[in-house]
Length: 406
Ligand SMILES: *[C@@H]1O[C@H](CO)[C@@H](O)[C@H](O)[C@H]1NC(C)=O
Ligand SMILES: *[C@@H]1O[C@H](CO)[C@@H](O)[C@H](O)[C@H]1NC(C)=O
Image (cartoon, rainbow, N blue to C red; front, side):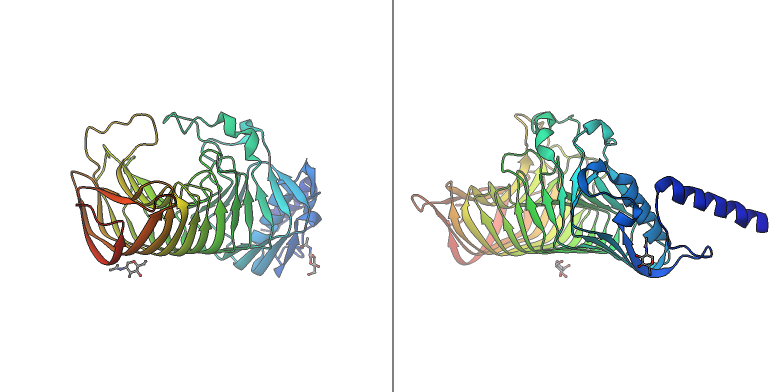
């Protein structure tokens, strides 16, 4: 027994020396509660030196400790290779990742694992990411290598920040700049609260979705500003209980449910509210998009889009069940994604094009329980707008402009 302990101690001392880290381990017991400053673990924060190891050492020490724990990233610019912050952190009650500084991504694409993000938080409970700092994805140099807008078998560039299988996460007052691909992705998260998030990339940057959700439940995103080159927020397969509010979106492609119906293993999407948000110069406002020829039967159920302002938007209200981002897609079979209980209400403002309301439902499974209430969308030039429908029987109430499909 003694021998084993001694042996373990040699290992941990050895590791501390290798990482150049100072630890607060005394007598072999992890300390309870405390602050783990990345600078005390060797981070330089000068924007050039590789601080990846120091961040990992600080995370490991924090994760191995107990109680309420903070990882502090003081102001400065920290150059980071792809990095995974892994849990579970068994004895940690809450873990605050306080980013006062900027994290800057390497631009060397060879460093990124296939399908991996740049910064990943994985399997952590009770994580709060806050502090006013910035994730700088340095995407501009890799955007020319992104062939995804044209080629469906493209190599996907890394997402800037991923939350994977986290529980009870708060993301507050954080900026994401120029991601290479998506800015943020939530995969398999439960109970996630995002607010005061600023996302920024040029309107022309490819596939730079702001926040993408998949397989997650209990997600609220509020009071945030997204200006980017793709969807401001995209709600993919397998999500439930999602509330999006107080978003300013634009430039960008709007807030989307989808795209859905492309892969075999997709789950239903249900119980989504998008409300109290503004769209400025976006290509779409709110949109549900599903591919034709979908391999599996899935459902999109109980969606409400309420109190939305459109300013100079191309297509404010869109259901597109023949979604095809490429020049050509296989449309030989109708989409098998079933839409029901879809409600658009209190949506007003201006459009750039005449087609203000597009309800293009699947021929195979026409939309059910689709309703529109108080819609007022005028063309910025002539004022004239129109509705187009396909396999859609909508119920209308309140004031409706453009007039319903005939
Ligand atoms: C170690 O603990 C002391 C006192 O609690 C604290 O001031 C210091 O920042 C800690 N160092 C590390 C590396 O966490
Ligand atoms: C519809 O979704 C909302 C928002 O998540 C939820 O509050 C409500 O309970 C859902 N309604 C039904 C009938 O499931």
